[in-house]
Image 1 (cartoon, rainbow, N blue to C red):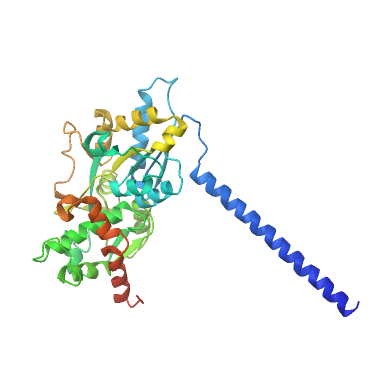
Image 2: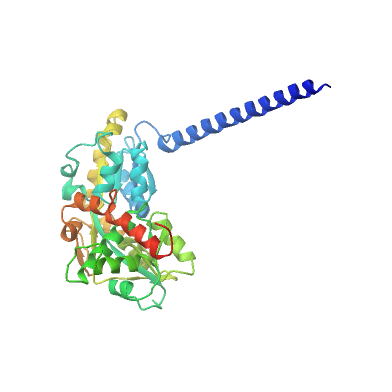
Length: 363
């Protein structure tokens, strides 16, 4: 074959390879689109509810569903489905299109990030249900290895000693964010400035020193806890009180709960996602489900699962005694505090940069 013939064949081969690659990329893109559709538009009957929540509420919502459906007429019983992950990640999932009917997240700021104006959440959502649409509260506690070999008792032990701290990543988890805010408040209280954090300043130095030793796990609190359990490194894990009570009730062989003298009060919230319930005609059922959370039975279920009920008639004698402070107590108006710490240019991103620099990284 002539040289020109060889060139012609090689040219056709190159074109064919390019064509096959193009087809492969198109098929891959189509597959990714289908997978994304399945994730964000899960198949379910038209009248089924999808409740999107953070990951430590799995058992709680399982009990809620059982009790809620038990009191309904079997012929009218609605299928209730759940999605669980870290609160911040779930907020992002809903914002990107996950078709929740009901959303239950660790903070009002997470919920507002998830819904905003795009999904038409009722402007008065906080007034739609009792206690600012917060069916229960919680706080941040410490989980340590069995026997507490490092003798960790309070926040000062985390600041003053070279203990290895583990936390769910605040980029994913509501527990991670509340743990950070609790640490900020406690750093401020150690110095004359009170809870204010000045950069630079003594309280800021305490905070950077602590977070230089924090190992972030990029999961919600439940999955992050299982990673902490399996790892040999890490002396203390910062997490929800409900997780500590769950392990305590199960007489866990590996971990035990330590209650600090003071910690932050978290107020998880719940709301309907207006655009979705209206397009699917599930608003009435979604409202009925949320109302059940505030009923005496729903409140008792929250207490049994380690969440502090709002109803003063529910017995809370089994909960640990500690001083609780709210985000507003420590930092002023809630949304402004969230922006100050987690917004673009906020103190938390600055902390990460300072932490990286002091670990020998590049800013």
